[in-house]
Amino acid sequence: MDPWQAVSQLGPLIIQRAEEHGFKLLSPFAERHGSWELDLYRKDVRLDRYVFVAFTIGIKFPTINRNSFDVEFWTGADDGSRCTRHLVSKFAVTEDQFTTPEFQASVKKGLQEALRFANRIAPEDLNEPFALRFAATAKGKGA
Image (tube, rainbow, N blue to C red; front, side):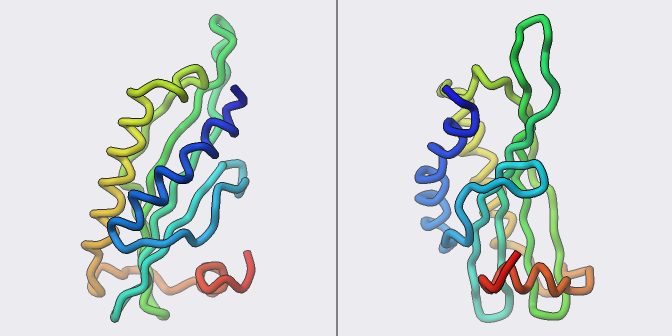
């Protein structure tokens, strides 16, 4: 199976888990800056919260003729003037592991950690000036 097809098939599982934590799909899996990324979003009274799931092709293992992939779970939040972004977890897999129960369990665990982390971000955690490009993307006005 094509690795990107395998990643795309995780979309419904990720979205279902995210909805259980009050997050909605901001953008489905798509190529962004060399990664295959899915973005989630939750607006509350004080903050807009984000979870980003990214799959990036790594190195090719010539002895086994397989590509490796880095799987990353990022969180972020903003209040319109300040923001923050954190790498919550990361692991590597080879493309032949995409269909294994262990891989799916690792994705569920990483997503769960990222959703919990995103929901715990407080206004005082916002430590960077808010990027206008990030705001436009989050509001659905462009990339």
